[in-house]
Image 1 (cartoon, rainbow, N blue to C red):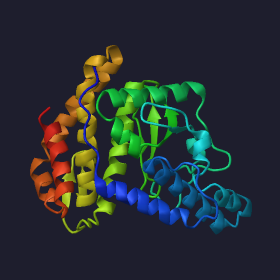
Image 2: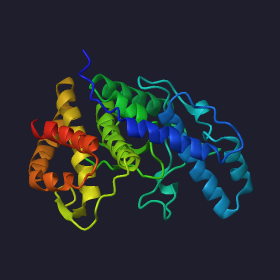
Image 3: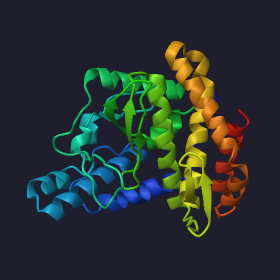
Image 4: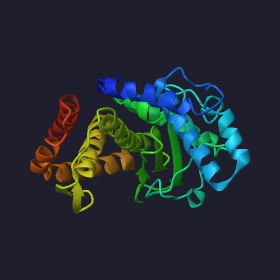
Length: 300
């Protein structure tokens, strides 16, 4: 039986997706193909915009013309069915992913020659979407993990690295261990970051950078923006892990059990700072969402 779904619907985000997508599409002469789901169109429009801007900066006329003709970055042709809708699964070479002033981390943009994932990684990722859905996180991944870029294949003993960037919302970059339960955890974490970025933007929340808070995850002082991001994304993965843990066994069970125990210890050290940081969020509904998930994770 599927777990109770968490509510990630937030009307300011839906409004942002529609408005921003219309703005981007107005810059392209061709009409977009993939417009049935606002979140999908929003994600792909940002890829097309980033690709077109990059092509223009370096004088690549061929690439610029391609993006002008494909304002959805050809996403409709690349998508595969999943439990949360059509998804795009990529497998770019991390060593060839660019870095630029738009991001502190490497990233990958859809283009004329996409690095599509092989069949086994495609199956792995669609299984991860299904696992997330069965454990209550389907709507989060439906709107905030439209594209998954699988990076390095690792083992459970390795450090798994994942990230998202604000310029490419709806996109998740992550290592993986060939297990859909673990991959779903990391998709949820990064989709959570994408959700909060959109929530802050759509509500016009500007968080003061004057106050800093100790982040046990980085063992450093962070401004409210980064601290609240951590106190949202990690609790989401804690809730997911607690729900999925008894569906696993062996090495994966041990890995996730250790992870949950570690996150409980880290989160418990943030209670005073979290209350202070949360008071800096001026939007009541958003503040309540962040508090609800944090409290639920704290009670695990």
